[in-house]
Length: 458
Image (tube, rainbow, N blue to C red; front, side, top):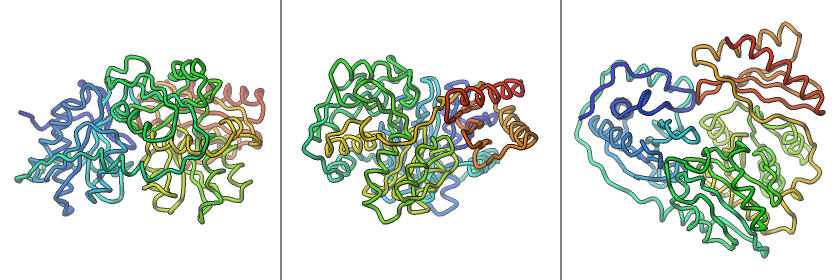
């Protein structure tokens, strides 16, 4: 039925996962081949079972079946979750104590993309060189064979139970609009949120892998226009949106203002810093200086780290931090949550905070240092070109005598701002972000470095 794919596209093996366009870059034979490689590899390190799940993309079930076949032919038993959000998959691995697994998803990518997030063992999602080593393993085509079983497991009751015991809502009843964006959270968002004392309004709550209403990335402001309108029309206190596979959250205030994740993180840090013993918090290189300023002002310590869900989540876990996150919307609570990223959980933590105060979201941000910043800017750049452009940006900064760090791309640091240029690990793009203390300085930095990107990106 399926066959080993000799000409597998090497460019789909990216920095945090496997991701590409269906069916030109990823098809059933690709999924089967990855399954054969995955099953054979985890068998070689002594594993006997793997947990697998898939999101609601149109191609996900087809790829899931091919992946499952490949893993089972390698002699690995399958625990099949079926249609779940990525956080539900993470929790199933924790609950079942089976840490080898694959989630079929392309997260917030366009509807024709798909891919695989995967973990070999307890160390978590594969990333960086691990993924390249896995590609090399697949290309050897030296796979194990064996008999295997497949059992289904319904993680939904366990997942709801985890939420039901986690919150302490106050006396204020918050009115919230939520937008699953027709992504996979649509299969549980309303039912889950109705467990709590919230006045709830839902939009775009039908599970539909066409994503007919807007692109499923809640941290890009233009995707939140319908949510903003619904919040204002309903006189809601807040609006929450979730991405395609449910591991990220976006937020708008009662007047329809978009709140980026770094400001959400300020609200959380203010709420928990006096409730946790370890006052170290992680953020990625794209976050505003307002976050690091606030952590320091509160007596905490900020840890600046590279971007990427697989990296940031592992760092928060390995350093035993109570909370961390990145601008893209991934946040990790470990104060009273198992540490994996869940957009629905992140949203409920915000609603819990609001329920215990009479302040608005804006009120919870009063007194922070304000900077002017751009959204994340994307520049199309082939995978074979983009890393070289970043290297040349570093050479340019060196030639100008600028101070810069290379923890993730090149971040050029000035007394009154910064410029960040990175190669995207999820697509053929360069990304850039700029921040400064004044609008004029922001424009200067943006003009200088965008001009340089455009000059080099040829």
